[in-house]
Image 1 (cartoon, rainbow, N blue to C red):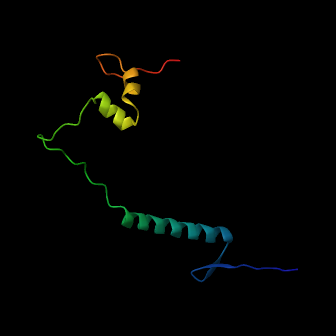
Image 2 (cartoon, rainbow, N blue to C red):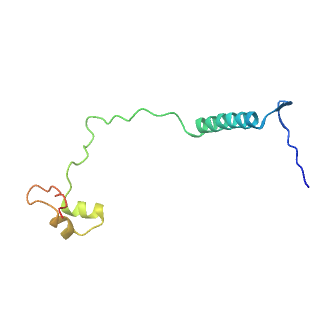
Image 3 (cartoon, rainbow, N blue to C red):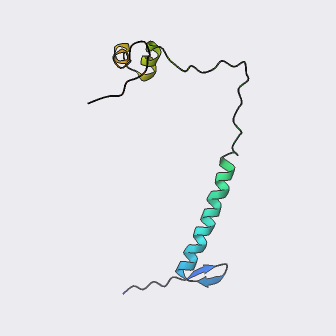
Length: 92
């Protein structure tokens, strides 16, 4: 019969298996935290656009919408209420 006797030592002191696992997990968590801090820079404040910047469009043409959604213009036209260019909800 084969018998294996494992002794866990931490800083030269014998510890239980649970104590060894706890110590290793704490050191692993600290290592991951320090690596994450080095890899990802601190959050930057949001960029403020100047007043003379061109505003983003609030509406798109049928052609632009079809292009953005990768569908045909006819598909978009069928889903739009005439004159208002608002998408209708699907009804069964």
